[in-house]
Length: 125
Image (cartoon, rainbow, N blue to C red; front, top):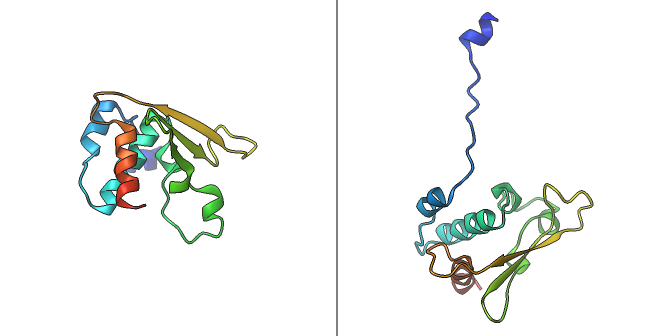
């Protein structure tokens, strides 16, 4: 018991991201990293995803394109009122067959997901 008292757990509590926190994270700056992060956090928040399901650290992994999210996995409906995001694997997809996540428009919101995705596509076609 003494070791536990001397070296208490340093594991930090992970709080869910709220809309107010997301609004502070999203920068809308034109830099590549910022555009990608803005899009990733917005899709994760709006689509109820873990950020780790759509971002990654190692692009050189051999199975990268088969399990990780790519720009080609995002489609915008012609009327610009809907995003369809194909998630190749998720925490609830036990068969690894993937799932389409539909994200609808939020009009009049700074965190308008379709505008953020269009910005990403315009910047990096």
